[in-house]
Length: 174
Image (cartoon, rainbow, N blue to C red; front, side):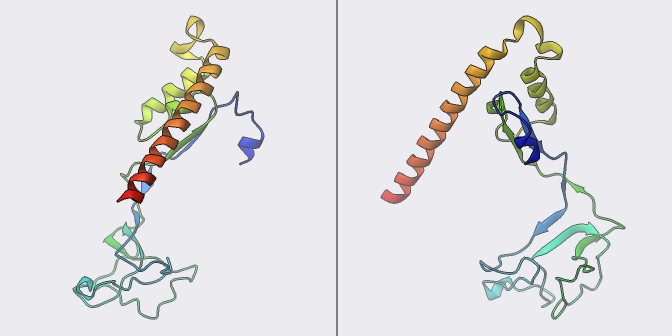
C-alpha cells in the first residue's frame, strides 16, 4: 500500500505478482467455517480415509513433516507455532509448485495485465508502458497512451459490469 500512496496512478504502472507458488494446499471437503488450522470432518461418511485417521485442512505435497505410518492428528494442537503440517513426500524442505500465480496491475497500461500471462509477457508490458527498449522513440506518446488507457479501462469496466449483470439476471431467471 505504501507504493500506491507514493505514486500517481495516472503516471505509474504498479504490478503485483509472484515468481512461483508452493506445494501447500487445502484438502478435502470441509464444512464451511471449519478452522483452517483444524481437521477435516468429512461431509459424507463415504469420504473417510482408508486408514480411519483424520487429516488436516492444510498440508504440503512434500517436506519434513512426512511420517509413515501417517500420524493420528486427533488432539494435536495445530495452532502451535512449532507444528509442521503433514506432507505427502519426505523431503528436508518444501519446494516450489507449478500453479499459475495471480497478477494484478494498476495505472497506465494496466489493461494489458489480465488473466493468465507468460512471465516474459510481463517484462514487455513494463517496457512498453515505460517507453524503453524496443518501445522507445516514435512508438511512444505518453499523453496519447494515458488517454487510451483511461478509455480502455472504462471499456473493460463497462464490459465487466455488463457480464456481471448478465450472470445475475440469468441466475435470477433460472
